[in-house]
Length: 360
Image 1: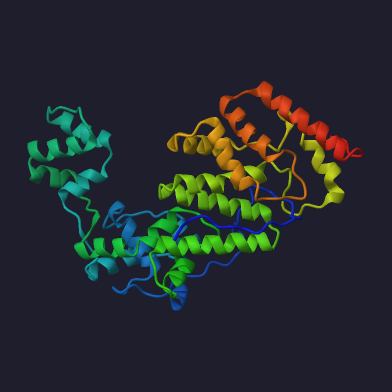
Image 2: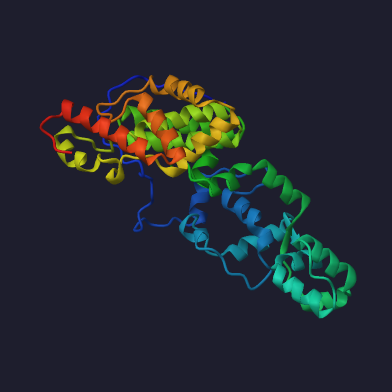
């Protein structure tokens, strides 16, 4: 189950690049879906992950004359999406859509133009426009006007999407190196449990691997993924704990491949505040303050909560104390540039005392 994870107290010796992200090489060979299927496990209804994803997108496509996004090939090795749509239709997971679904596929402007042509009102939401058009204009005329048909899910198709929800989730959420294929294998490994618990277990495992390997940029990113995951589950307090770690490492001055012999180079970009690269990402600040509001915490209560987590962390270099880290979050939220300038100046004096031979 999702929840807090206790990590060891350790000296960190890696340079954190907080924007680090795992991206496949452009030169990496694309493996066709037909080959990937050999190492995948079909659902109880006989569908492989890419087929479930086609099913998920089916209602946005017509029965003919489609164009498809590039991700089908470069992410999943699917060249002929139409072939899979027809197969899903033949196997009873899809059906040809009706007149209403054809109209709903059009944008509101097209529907309003049709209403206007018949002297009908054009006010209201799209659903109301569709309903009005269907009620006031003959279906024979509408069938002629909106002749292209989309696919629609059958009850069996809806059941598949509900049971195989991991496919559409991981397609829309970038989490480490997980994709529909790798998560398919994890889902079908014992012990069996809901897919979100499987994802959480994987993220926890990966974060510990990053920590053990001293890849603290990757560790920070993974904890950020975990905080977002917890936010989705409305576990706000746990999410705030994860965000505390993100803040701690974002303000450390470290990056992946940290080597103290190059500290004089890194230090050129530490101070002053207006020129520093060691600052809070606005998105992280916003989410922390959102958690504060959701939990109804005062500034002091927020500080105590974040410090409880930060005080369990350590690093070979940190420009700010844990207390200052939380203060910086609050100052950024208030856009208090004057206070931020002062706290960075204080940190610079402390840095120069510790490293008198390094210019910053």
